[in-house]
Amino acid sequence: MVLHTSGTTSKPKRVPLSVANLCASANNIATTLQFSPADIGLNIMPLFHIHGLIAGLLAPLSAGSQVFCTPGFNALRFFSWMDECHPSWYTAVPTMHLAIATRAKHNAAVLARHQLRFVRSSSSALPPQLIDQIETLFRAPLIEAYGMTEATHQMASNPLPPMPRKRGSVGRAAGPEVRIRSEDGQFLGPDQPGEIVIRGANVSSGYESNPKANQESFVDGWFRTGDQGVMDADGYLSITGRLKEIINRGGEKVSPREIDEILLDHVSVHQVVVFGAPHKRLGEEVAAMVVLHEGHECSERELQQFVAQRVASYKVPKKILFVDELPKGATGKLQRIGLAQRIGLGFGSYVGGEF
Image (cartoon, rainbow, N blue to C red; front, side):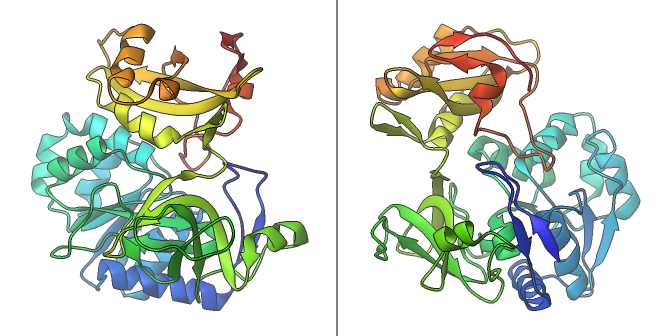
């Protein structure tokens, strides 16, 4: 199988995945989630994407489970699909989980009828606030996992109960070997931040027709994920951000995810994406795009003061734009890279544009 990377931080690259890669990854996920013939998965993920293809379809089928394939994600139909297929689990990206949670209050009877074994999330970070909401709604553990196309999806995962699920972590290595590496190529110990690197039977052997990318990404038998992270003494991995998404504000480094989570704690904020905007003197400045809860009002200054109470002043977004919907890619991922250029935001001025 040949897939393209999502292209959230660079031009999409072609990734050939062998039968051995596919089988290894399906087995890794089936083992992590303890699939059996008794399971029924409600697949709402697109089947042109590694998440849906492997976690949503191939892994459960490899264990003899049933899979109910929908025509595509539709939050308005999700709960009627639950009544139709009686699922024991589903997997989705955070934007889908949010849309489902938003409609859940209108579907309390459906939720009461169906007890899920677990809910799974992957492909991008899930805010802690939404994890709590999903677990309460479905009365089931939310299993956050870490995957990418080059690894035929899963690299790490939080385990099922009774093993601990650590909030803010994507869990332990769940298939390939996972290490943290410094800029000079040294492997780092617990609680030392660096780049996440992997190797294993599920990892692609290289990009198709892209020697430059292969030379940069495949080093000494390890694949460089481009993600920055830290691993604790128990082997639980936390992702602190994409290296290309880190905002460099005059030499001060800002993780967009850190500011995302702070803004989501505000009572009026429904969704948010923090990103870097060009600045003539500093290089980059911190900016944010926010969707408010229906019926709520909030000013830019109020949110800036809210963030300033928790972090250093250089991390506070200089500009906050209020929108009805956040820009997303075809698979539901929020698009940080190039967002400022796409909407015409730079040097502290907003000149308009379209998503």
